[in-house]
Length: 130
Image 1 (spheres, rainbow, N blue to C red):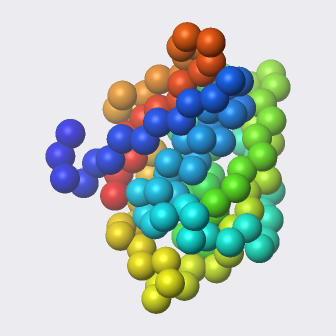
Image 2 (cartoon, rainbow, N blue to C red; image 1 turned 180 degrees about the vertical axis):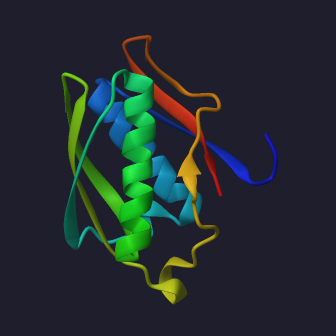
Image 3 (tube, helix red, strand yellow; image 1 turned 90 degrees about the horizontal axis):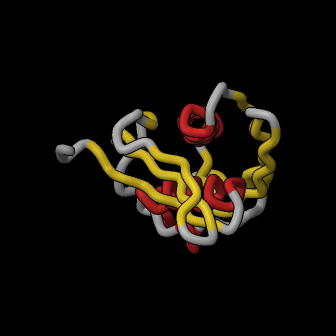
């Protein structure tokens, strides 16, 4: 790993909760998720053949939404079934003065990619390029 990579990890009781937590970790790379008001919602849909690739698709879809809509997200409702993910991400437009973004995330990578049962829950992790 070098200076332009950051690892993110989400944990939850279910795979969907772990994906939501990974999305919160993605926001935390940019700014404090607690500073982002859940004022607007955006629907996100993606699909992939296995859980690891679904995590990459999910994070990339959020990164795209953040860039195109110039928004940050702080709350995530995620549903996963049959290799498809449907989510509602809540957030607000980026306010550079208030959010003070540290970096811009460019994309999720396959590095350290893992989605698995761990203990009594799930973990979803990968490295993102910043």
